[in-house]
Image 1: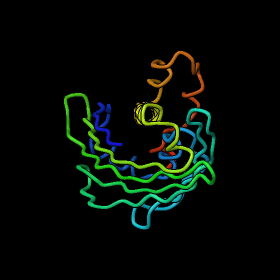
Image 2: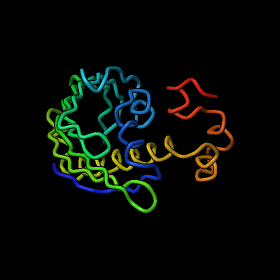
Image 3: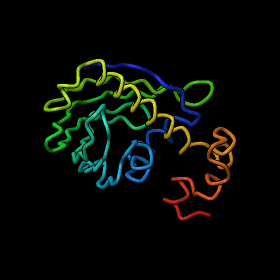
Image 4: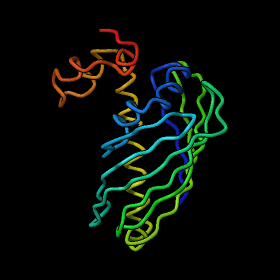
Length: 175
C-alpha cells in the first residue's frame, strides 16, 4: 500500500519536528497507543491496540528514524507484530515546509501487511490507514495548539484540555 498526503499544522517546523521526536507526544498522537518508549537516536518501542475490520489485536513494534534534517525532514521505518492477527511494516518520508499558518507537513508512506490483516482486502486496509493517519495529525495539531485553543476547536472535550499540560510544558516542567 502506498499513501501520500499533506497536513497544515499551526506551529513552526522546529516545534513540529521536536514533537515528532518526543515519546510522550507520539503516545498521545498515535491512535490506540498504550506505550511508546525510546529515543530518536536508538529508536522507539511501541505497543498499540487497534481494531481493523473484524480483527482486533495488540501490536508491538519498533520504529527507527533516519535521514534526519532538523526542522525539515526525516524518514520513519517501522515494523509491528500482532500475533495471530499478522504484521505490518513500512516506512514514511516526512517533509516539513514553513507556511503562512505554521508548517505544511507532507508524507509519503509505503506499507505492507500480512496474516489475517492481509486477508481483509486492500479497501479495508487502505481506509483504515487513511483514518489512522488523519487521526494522528489531528491529535498532533491539538497537542501543539496553544492552551485553550484545543477546547475551543473540539466542543465534545469540554474543559478537559485546559487542565492538561502541553507536551512542551511537561518537558520543561513549566506550569
